[in-house]
Image (cartoon, rainbow, N blue to C red; front, side, top):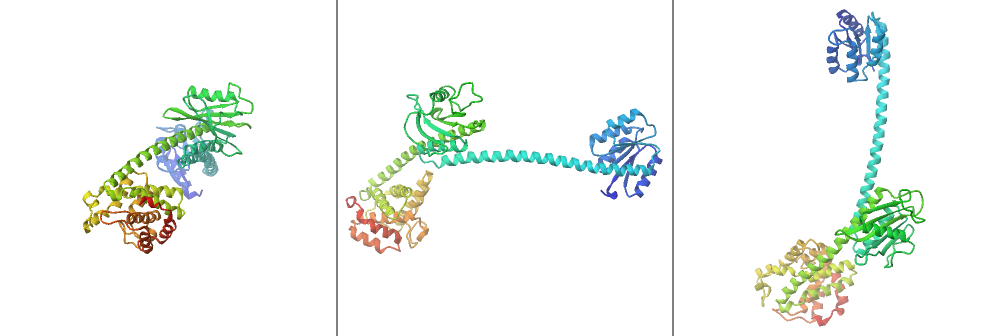
Length: 510
């Protein structure tokens, strides 16, 4: 801290003392402010960053002791030096109480006053540095605490997200049972986890999944494992039959004796529509650790999300069955109006399945092809009967109207929000490999692979079946046409797969 940056305040009701002191310290390079009483001194302090204040005690309006107290309340780091011509024990005691750092007797030697100022400023600088250091240490401790809390919170959020993601990817109820015990083992650091379903009809526990620290999941239909004590089984049943809420038991907190070998265990019912569907139980067999309240919160979250996943699977299966039934009924109603296209969609789905298998499609892709094949012409619902059932050739305008059916069909299926992949195939099953198809004029690999498969299957059935405007073609001729259109209308790879499976097509369907 250099002198030209230090601002000092001299407070005295004697104008002569103010003038002499101000002149002396200005010559020494200090920036000096003066005030005749405590009130005006506080005005200066409120506007200027004062480094040290020298004040007389006896002054009008506000004396030096009251000024020192006001300064301490405003800024405890600002040093105050009292100057008085009437020293007394009472004043000395009061100056200490008011936070005064030094006490000078008038008449004050200006050189001594400067030495006092130098010492006080050095002490203040050290005090401020220590204060800043202390505040920094406290701030660092607060930051460490916040970081620990933040890390714990992030870990908690990551754990909850992982639980949700795992159940979102579960495609069967038995897979969900396994996820419950797997997550219970990993998230809770358990030694063993069980999941039992609870048939309300006979109020029993049926063991469907379990896993221990070193083992793999076990699924069976045995009754409660014989190595689980009857006392624990009775406790689990008691939880279900009473409050049916998650419950934690440890050896140190339990009033009842735990079976030998069990340090801590928890029970978390899995409820669907407020009824107990099953129950998860987790165990610690050794060590000093017991399950915590946070861990029972995790287990409760796991069973809640498992319940939601089970409900979603049941709901999805019901919705899917109903929607499939409704849409297939639409297609059947559409085809029954035209004797020539009856069962067309079913046959197309069968042929597409054969081609897909020859091309190594996965079971999921084959399921998509099956649904898309059965629904590929559902868009014809939006085409007028006089065009759709016209016995002769279509006019250009009528043909353009017919060409709208893939987009209409995709729109119908898309609005259901369930079959995105099927929607894409339905829209593009009339695209051509050379880009001259409809509705979007896609070419080559830009056409979805499964749509290219459906295109060949649809064309095969159309040529091999009677139509109002022509008789069906012989199978051998149909095969030749498809072979000739390889690379133009059809994907060569799909044509090759079709040719390898054509002998498997049931001619009885045509």
